[in-house]
Length: 275
Image (cartoon, rainbow, N blue to C red):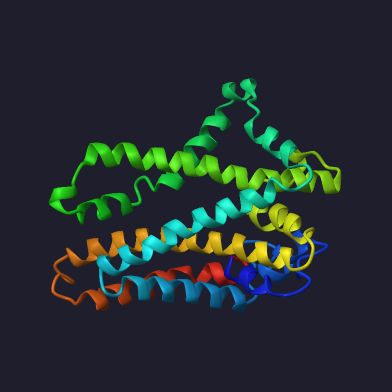
């Protein structure tokens, strides 16, 4: 997303014309398989390093500094989502996209994969078993501790946010279907495809200036969501590490730097052309 944000300031957008080739060949520089490692993908390496450096800078003074930054990383995506919804609803074919989003296929309820994908989405977006929710809950002040309230609010807000996000995505897909003549269900809506192939193709169809502006808004939203998640998971590990006998007396900044460098090192194989 950081790489796409950088490219978003170019006119015309560099992925115009062939969004799959730009994503897989130019950005990811994919090899023939997981074990076909030919070298480092340096733009991805740099973006990954920047993400971990930012995470380290946010958390280096402890959870209090991270909490202040989260005010920005949590609220900014909502601003971006609203902006994308407003723009998306102005596009031709937007109502077709919304209709496809809200249409219920009753027969799909009998398919196990429907429930498996739904469970994956809920578990991933809520952060179940990642430790972040429990970690941040442990830092709550005694006067503000209400686990029943928070336990109800977190999944409710998460579900409503996911629902809201769909209204930012599907009007664009409806527009794209109108432009290409392909049905919405035939677009690349799996994995990274919906973000870096289908949606970027729609952004490239905008007039100049609008294409750049809304590309910046969209990828800024993706980056803040990603950094927010990374901050939460990393803080959970830092909190655990500080409670171990080995690091109990170590300064917070040292544990934070050590944790971020460790995770950055673990992520290096993902920054190769086989990653």
